[in-house]
Length: 117
Image (cartoon, rainbow, N blue to C red; front, side, top):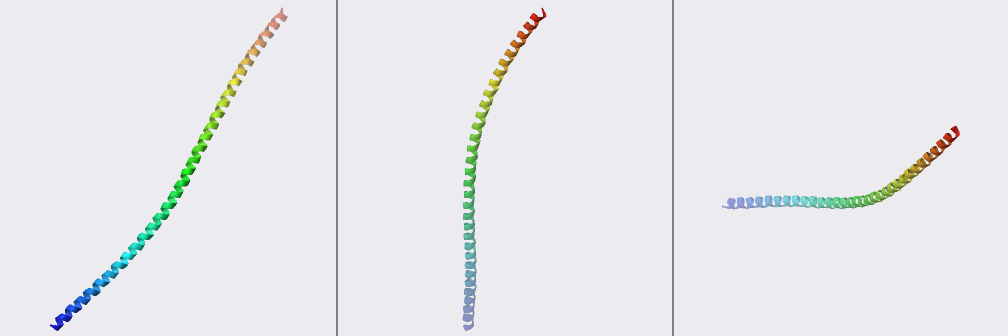
């Protein structure tokens, strides 16, 4: 009976030792996983902050480019209007000069005809 009791005590102690070892192993794994999670959270936080900064910079660049495009469009439209007006003035001058030249040619023809007589 004593040996059975000793055997039960030994089995119980072995079981306690094994459970304790399993518990310690589980705690070590838990601590490792918890540390890995904290590291991942820190990395995610850094990446999120970096991404947000980059997004803000890109949004500002985009806004600046939109303003630049608007300004350049206005400038181009004003230049186009100026060139159209200049073209119209040149066309009018050309037609005016053409009419004067035709008048001059007609006058010279008449003089030629009079001289030929």
